[in-house]
Length: 212
Image 1: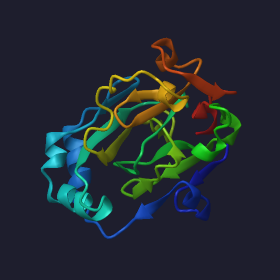
Image 2: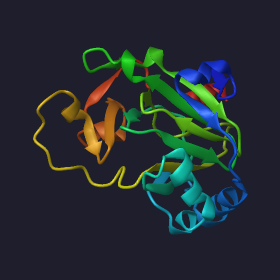
Image 3: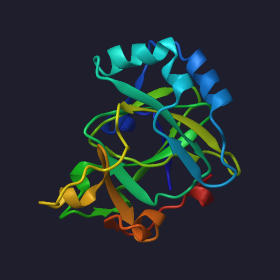
Image 4: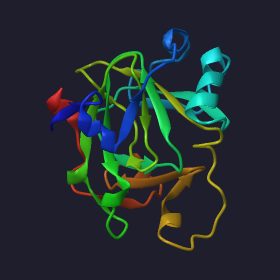
């Protein structure tokens, strides 16, 4: 699979690089405070030490226009697609080292299903802050080198990824609601599918291990 860079023009269809922020304390805290799982990935929606940094308020005011946000993380080891998700808002990501995102477009969902052939891979260099648009399908980061893990900041509107609202599904999108402000399309091979997530990814469960 071709692995593009978020610094290439083609990333503009999925997101953009954000500049003008002092990220030194954010990167240092992310590296020092958040744990690295030995296997798999771990996610925390809101990390107090990240939330207390002055740059957290700056991201809230400038990047989200004053909307309350949560600063959390996704750390670990991963090379597979497994699922894709979307939110009603953009998401910000920042890694202590290079990582890769597998990205799709909501416009490519046809009759509730996405063909994984439409998914593209993008490398995010260490220390580069990116915005992933609300129209972009994404999920857990992937490792950028064999045997290497990742520590990735996740900034979202506060409350995102908490417990799913109790609803009675009335349309197809309601079937995808997996958590608060989180709609999920799962591959049949994923753990999420085994837990009842809607299987809406058709084709190969992309694995980047041979491309690193």
